Image (cartoon, rainbow, N blue to C red; front, side, top):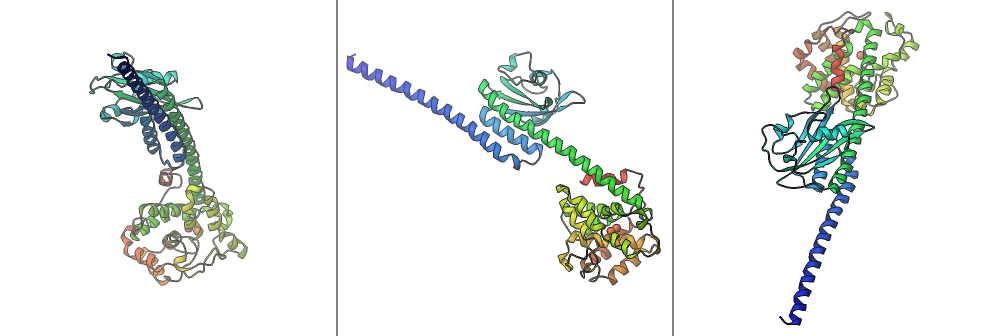
Length: 407
Ligand SMILES: [Fe+2]
Ligand SMILES: [Fe+2]
């Protein structure tokens, strides 16, 4: 070989090596770039994440982008029973995985959860540490597991699996940890909000019960109005969310009476002007109580307008709207409320039959009541009859559970 040929071959080889190094560098750069992009996108999309499943799916998508893992499992930690329960899985063996809870220290994920430190177990199928899931093949696999910790509490764990000889790297563990930590914080906040919401719901339910205590003549009134409102809403063909809003609106419509003295509510004779003025405040007071909580926003109009008449009279007197301008939920509760008032006995008014009540509603349609809603009541009188004068024991908490469930 001539010297010139050798130089050319050497130069070509050198060029080839340089190209290979460059390709590797670009690949690495692209991978880092993808990770940065994923982190950036994640931080932007957090507020859009609805529930836990939506968020965990997103974390799965992100981490799998970085690690190219074949399988992903999210375990929720059950503190009471000290087990990790598979709650979400992306795997061809999903059914088998979802059936295998892990005790703490059991399998690689259980050990990671106890040590509270993420780790990698390459060639896991050859290790005694990992737990073989029944009814799955014992194939070549590597594991990457990260515990979900927030404020020192174990919330769960994330497991990723690579099949067919794929191996995990430390860098992939670190990047995955960023997302898992983010998920931990998200879940913790969700739990916290859930607990706060639960307390608010219990508070609201106890207010409704107290209103019923204040006015024993109308015991069960709020619950019956809730049921009437549901029947009317379904008769109007409203969507499920609106139906349930009207139902809860019925349960809560008189909540503002909590602020009115018992002696006024129990008065058997015609109220003094001053007392009547106070009674007329109850829709506004109720709307203010409920309006303090954003998740109850839809209920506010049901409460505020349940004494507003279709012709614009009624109260609140300073809100000048009439007809269909009055929010639908307010118009529904107005009819449901009147149905119960007419059919139950109260001071100075004997209980009337449902037929009587329907007749009165018809006489007042277009004046006090929305004619379309009165029509629906007339058409659904059989369903309504089931709840007319139905007793709901104030003491029995079961009667109020439905409110808590809907909320
Ligand atoms: Fe009322
Ligand atoms: Fe009422």
